[in-house]
Amino acid sequence: MQTVSRRIAHYVKGEGPDVLFVHGNASTHEVWSHVVRDLAVDYRCISYDLRGHGASSKEYDKLTLDLLVDDLEQLRNELSLRECFLVGHSLGALIAAEYAYRFPDRVRKLCMIAAPARRDEKAKSAGKQLLRQLSADGVGKVLPGLVKRWYTNAFVAAHPGSLEARLEQLNSIEDRVFIDAYSLYLETDISPKLPHLRMPGLVMTGEHSSGSDARVARYIADAMPDSSLTVFREMKNGILTEIPDRVSKELARFLRK
Image (cartoon, rainbow, N blue to C red; front, side, top):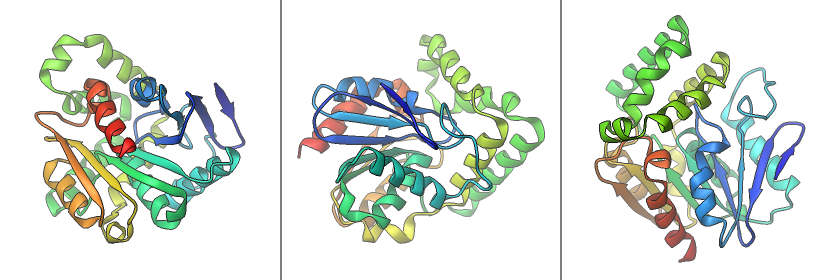
């Protein structure tokens, strides 16, 4: 079921306690499709397109974290949710963390997947270089190299169709939105907020995820008062596409606790 509001397009599947999914940059709600399929047996799963992405409004003067958090709060109001389980991936994890910081009484549990935090100078420099490359060469020329970095070589070789579908999804996002979202991803640091996130938390990532590897995930989990950690060995950034069944299993276990 799709509902397009003044700002946000959202999608609902299943019945039960509410789980709200926030996708990252270079994505749409579709990145959650396999996870939602698995969890909708026991939960009411709500995914949506961030502003500028998918079927949501493309209008904004500046893409800011406050704007995206306000959009999420509007969606919660639209759906009349008193509280929910909140799950975010990549940029979506940063949005989810900021939302949980601002509205802690509305978040039962918080799961952050492939979230960056406390970037060192090497990571900051690499991010700025990629941003310059995206702006100079265009997203279409840079994307194929990026996608190959997100998935293991074995997955790329065995599932070329999945890679093509992911590229098609990425190419549907306007260059301006892609670059603005990536810039926001780079400039946002949730580190100061982590000790204040007192709801039960789960941090998940791929061991070699660029910008959000096992070391970063351990830091985030340790900084939160009540959080557990799951690291998928040998995996990179694309765990929602590459191993969605394992992500669903860990997430279901966390929600049931």
